Length: 594
Ligand code: DON
Image (cartoon, rainbow, N blue to C red; front, side, top):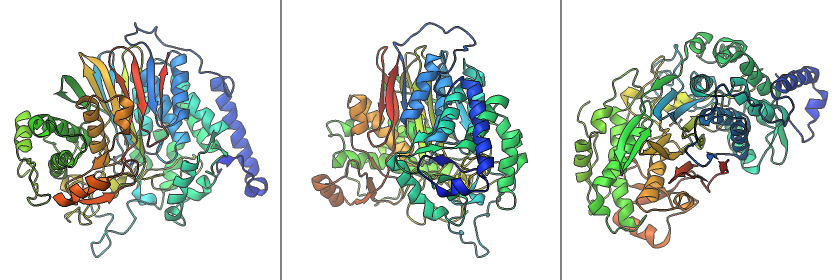
């Protein structure tokens, strides 16, 4: 095993019997890296396959969750790359600089608009072939605490690398190895650890201790040090040389299978079979825009469109209501009840069940659902049921970025390890973390899934139980808005079930309240879903307090703090100049790139 290195003095490194092996690996990774980049800080060389088309915007732009990934995007644009090249470079950079959420061992969704056409790439994780419906239950039928969250059995087949490979092969202009170069550089040369990342590591370290090899790799994430990941650099360099399928069929696949052997269910055959899937994005007309968003296995796109349309249907009821006033929050909460009731009943992996998307997004259906909402409704008094008839606490980390290029292409991408630092299992010899996406399935089938009173990030009912090869339901909602077939907004966020409600709120702040992008991101956000029935969650960034809090309590709501309401990264284009904006709650960077 070769652990990452950092500048702070570490005795074990100096005396370890593995030091020379480790050194050799560092040298190999560095040499490989140098071959690709011709020097540690050299810009990515321009090797564009075709000349760029005519610009439609004044500049390219990025809203990314850290400065390293924004720098990577800038380099890629400087080398002649397009939004897809930049997106793939960002994703791989985040796998290095954001080990809590960026990943090789996770999955995600990408909504794209390229050369005037919409696309959606589903690179969600899948259950291994040996997975079973009751795999998280003990012999009494109770869920074994933590099993779907920590350690080998929490791991689903990762999709990120095939997703990035397919997106870049299909639409990129640069060579694959060029878009990997910035990530290889950060893994080889290191990046500066900031206090929040150290803090995040410390939060999970206790949970992982004794159950995973997390500490062997990540105990060095200390604020102020330069953190190097030589094994990860080697893995990235191998993929840069051999292509994305190396992860699923080559040495990396062997290392993953070895790591899982005897502990987890994932096998090399699962990896070989994994392919990201191109799907039709959901498309809806709203407020003069075309909304392109995530179809199932996300629940997010359906939920977002339902919320936007129900709110538009309730125009009269909302007329004159102040943003985030108690009566405003009360109407939104009722909209959210209906969205989460439908999600619970009807959403799942479209490859194992025909999700009734058309019915759920039917205008007449949504108008009828909106008509049930009343200003004087007592919270929780009339239980909200799924609308088509028969048929809490959020973990913190996933990450989102938005990119546009001056040629009018856009990428909205959300990617996840599920929980912070995923399952805590690191692939020995390959240096990256594996996800705990299995926890997005229903772990106790046929039980009231919100027994604890909360619906987690994906949750759902029978349609989201564990089945071999099935994708767990997700909330990730990477979204693009078009106006006259041109990109007008690129938006998304992490946050589990908060993804739906936060994306919705920022969009309504932007369009219904005409806020500037930075103001829309800074505005208060709250969260409510079907269960717990009367709870409105508020955020530390902008707590619900004072008179507003009292009014909501008088109405019958319970107020509860939540730690995370998302980290929205968005770009608005109103005219020809992109306006990127990063959520002030996080560490993101919005940058215009000329
Ligand atoms: O796919 C999902 O919905 C979850 N795995 C996302 C988790 C998440 O956003 C946690 N982040 N803050």
